[in-house]
Length: 92
Image (cartoon, rainbow, N blue to C red):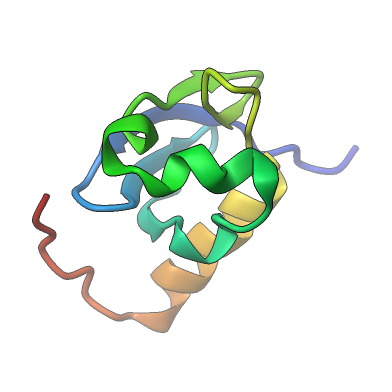
């Protein structure tokens, strides 16, 4: 059986970034701006609405039904971690 990543915790990290923690211990701060395209993501471009995210079904979701597949988030987190780049401090 293949590993199925699930977000177990998510914390706002400033701007449009969220610190994600997965069920295998992987953690990374991911910038969500590249995914904020299309009608369902339009409300998320407002910082106040973006911060209304919550963890549901193993991923990050918003009240309007928008979400991003946990596999997509996991891959982004792994790329950030493997790049060895320091995650910059963020500001609201």
